[in-house]
Length: 428
Image (cartoon, rainbow, N blue to C red):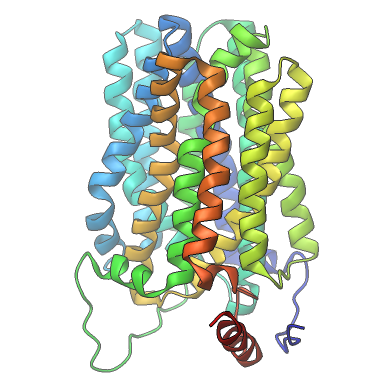
């Protein structure tokens, strides 16, 4: 049996006792609702104009490529400036993106203007994600960090539920997207103000005689930390092939026979399941066998995508998306806690920047991959084959990275280290 940990327990709402976290979380909620509304409106607008799976895939490509190109220099900048101020700047950048999309909608601008604005959005995202995630450990004490991660996940799920539904309702009843984009811009501006009011704790100084390293220092740290490498690689490959988000407009109109509001419900369904699981994790935060749990959840995600791809029923499709979101959120919490707790503060920006490349490649390039396969083989084949690919990849990662299979608690105690060493010897 795995030894018991002597680590202290914290209340289910411990993070909310911190002023910094309250400002951060409330701002993230407002901006998050706006940005998920924006993403839904963009997908619907592109599909409504073109009826092309290829053009839907290009939305993901336009958002992802700037992140991949700029992530490493962005990570260096994040580690060298005041992170809460850079967060405020990125939120102003997102507000500009929303304003440009609102103008494009009002003026009936051609589609290339939308794609160009999405490229600019990707440039902002390259700096926003590592800034936001690496800032969080300095806003709450260490013992409340996992609780803050869990609440962050819950807030993200709430945004991803409410945003698409609100966007779908606006699109259905007005037929115009500019109001959606305007609301997103306002939310981002509010977050910018709240971010500027944060008072992060002083960063932990690096060890004596430490060399700060360059932009590749984050990648080198991930390569050394095999559990982090395994967790984020698993997410990259599983979602790259197994995701279905980019094709939801096709499923909504051509397979499930619904409208823009139905698309909003479908897009929010994964996050309903994820929000439920986030609540469970907030109340019962300890995950004792994190590695096996992570592998099981990713495999279940693949199964739900196969079932979604084969479904002809709107409500069955909703249920499969919700279940997929639930199991995916468990793996999200595990990955985020691993990345932040096993990375020294002076490297967090660069490590999180590398992690953002993995996330963008899985989500946005995954959307491009889905659109490409759907163009040639149809949307059902694209989703079902992707789910099968996720199952194969999970098995391969479990086989090739025993460190991930043996991962116990996310925050290791000395007893956990002894347990891991005993497991390693039993594998030899």
